[in-house]
Length: 276
Image 1 (cartoon, rainbow, N blue to C red):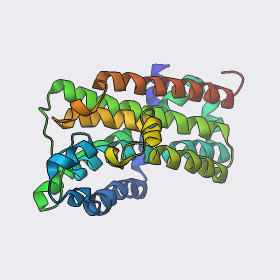
Image 2 (image 1 turned 180 degrees about the horizontal axis):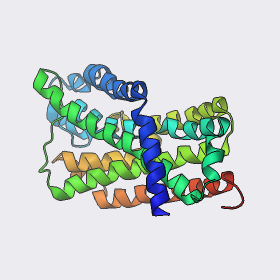
Image 3 (image 1 turned 90 degrees about the vertical axis):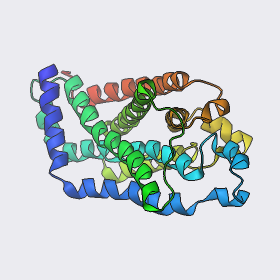
Image 4 (image 1 turned 180 degrees about the vertical axis):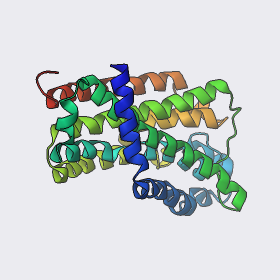
């Protein structure tokens, strides 16, 4: 099973590498968000330079851009997984999925290969966002300021948060892709899920200005869970504004990912034929 999974994963990665337009488009979105929204939404100006009064509103981040950049790492980890399920639908329409399912490869290998290949791009984009956000500070613009001591444990926690979040949403969109036959329906369903999930997270909004009911919803949002891990590890003042440690948030995020992965694997097994 491992050999089949590796071979199919390689196929999916080659297909991605041969589509530079898609890669360029994926890179353009986070760059635009950082350069436009991140630079324009300078909420700190509302406090007339009083950073001490502003810090609670961004949960310990030194400024809004740093808060925003950490949120964008989670944001792009989600948006970059959108087309994973669409590829399943197109492969079904063109007969590719039928040919693959007729090979000795099991449904587990077929599903696993798509999941692995689909997660590589969003994980890479998330770290690109953090690197670009830090680099902007050296160009005379607002930049990501890491105020905490960033050691090995913090690095592991940030990597885990981004990887688990990518796996969770890749599984979700694969589940939808294996359940729906028409691409138009797929994108309608995905947009109906994607936008509410993104907009009810703490990825973009300053936490201190949110109403109580919104905070209650956002606290259980998987994007929020991942972003809170990143902020806890990047900002030295952050721990006092969070009720739990980074490992607790990672555990909650892992629960989301396991649930979505099991659902997607079940739907993939059904879609790939009774012999599997």
